[in-house]
Amino acid sequence: MSDAFRTRRTSRPGERVAPVLHVLLHASMPAAATSRHRLDGVERVDFGRGSRAAVRTTEDGERRLRLQVPDPMMSSDHGRLSRVNGQWILEDPRSKNGAVVAGRPTRVAPVRADDLFELGHTVFWLSDEVIDDDEPLDRTSDGLRAPLPDLATFDARVARQVRELAQVATSTVPVVLGGESGTGKEVFARALHGLSGRRGAFVAVNCGGIAPQLLEAELFGHRKGAFSGATEDRPGYVRAADRGTLFLDEIGDLPSAAQAALLRVLQERAVVPVGESTPVAVDFRLCAATHRDLAARVEAGEFRADLHARLLGATFVLPPLRDRRGDLGLLIRRLLAREPGGDQMTLTPAAAYALLRHDWPLNVRELERTLAAAVARAGRGPIDVGHLPPHVAAPPASSLEDDGAAADGPADGPAGRPAGAGAGAGAGADDDDTLRATLVEALTRHGGNVTAVARDLGKHREQVNRWVRRFAIDLDGFRR
Image (cartoon, rainbow, N blue to C red):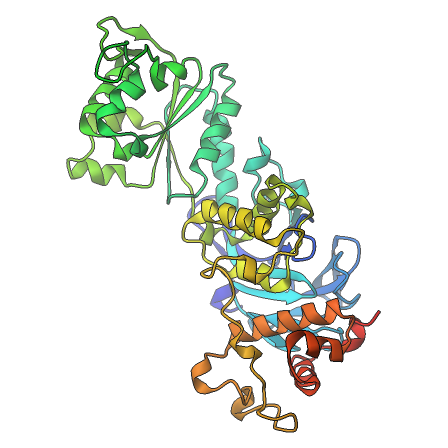
């Protein structure tokens, strides 16, 4: 096999890297279950429409996997993915609507590690990722086991962290959550509290969101009249978390004075409110989060070494969303369900592809806000690329320009490029994907009526026919 898909051991016992296929998202059914399938040892994957199933067989000495997907836009025999000379080749010679690999319509194409490909309205992802030896060959999102629903994941690394979190939850050791902003650290912190069995409250504090001059009073409480503006007694966040969990988000942003006061609280398990002299005993579990390297800040003199030592208990560094693409469909399903009417929302294939190929530099928080805004904009749906932020959406449909200057002009320019695209138009895989998705949506809406589609898109009928031929689209599949 090629280096991209060679099964190989990692430094952790019982763990290795192997090829994996994800049924990542059903655009027209985003609430449907997704799945993950190990391909180590598999020579061929057959795809088809049907009740969800993953059937493994051996035929003529060849190990095969048949995946059935309940996608009405797929054919009963919608092609195959075969391992040939060390690489995976997707072939779709007979289905009505063909396939799309890395944004380009095709009948035959190589599929490389990290490529997305589409069959019908379903997006698949082929990856090279960490697996545990004892994990099932085929897993569905509905069958994932997790101590809490929000912790369900296909990612072996995150699943291992979830198991370790559950193991330490009932102890008293402090927990530090690292990773980029928006990776779900508060979700992990809330899960830690939920699994701890502690009867008190979960109290979340954004250390960077409180004015430095008020931070100690907010954390440790204050007496009425202790300072200007203190019009009443306040217990403070630490005492509010008594018998519960105190979550200090962005603890690396604590000013030095507050760091010293927090260290004293952790050492003495008591807090002295501002304006008081008598300590008040507190019992809380500390969970801290930061996107900063605390050890580096200690070396730079920006974070107290003794406080850092007090925080050393269990540390979890959450991976960024771009490194756990296999969970994108699962997260989209979960986040849509939280929005009013979101569990009934659908996506166009173009919008689904845009969501799945985006790198999400701001991680789960960015995905959550993008979906919330898209649901609001789409109304009754479906969510289309126009409902997504410009930096997430597919590029502008510049490829919707005519392929030829006149109806009787050539269908394609040199090297198969649309003659009307022009060298400066930037036509490429992204534009082709947008064009094909727009065309398929229009054909679906108008039942394959080319004249109606041409009128809808403001194009000549022959131009629509050119696109149909170019993308190998079978019109019979749209006609009712």
